[in-house]
Image 1 (cartoon, rainbow, N blue to C red):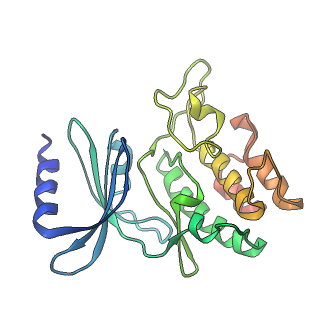
Image 2: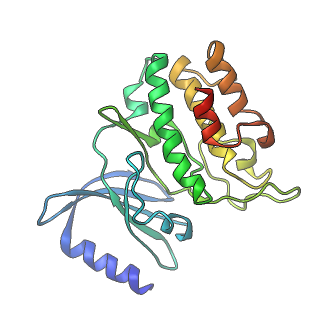
Length: 237
């Protein structure tokens, strides 16, 4: 067992109590922890995969990303201790409703700020969707780094070795057709914009006017035809 992983296991066992299991699947578990002394809340992720990508986020401060405090890995799984963000997910808040243009604009600008940090570190989130955005007051935070990976340049004849992401939000290349780069997150962001505005995937109903043009550009099948950076999306807004 990795020595840091063992130390972290012991530290969590001694200093925290599990307040609630938020999600549990065959891939891993997400729990809300409470520190026994300070009573401060934290999030603990355990998942299968590689820790090298999420390690690059340790100590990074951005109001639109949770702070990652520690990452450890053994031969079976990765363990990540991170900041607890209060609030509700965007998917919960938008059940059965659509949002106004200015509300969506504010959310998208926040997520662009979060993705700018990830992309500047050559990281792809790979699962941008309303379920992974927490709204706290007027602040939107992109969460869940279980599928994060280092970006790969698009190469003919090469593909991602593991298919991850959410059906409807993941671009074609995330299904093993080619390598994933940062435009995969731009594709997913475009789908999310459309869902927030219309309640539907852009293939079923496209947002009106300028928003529709932004969504169309984000969700082009060819990565080279999408916006290449989140700064370009900010400028379009």
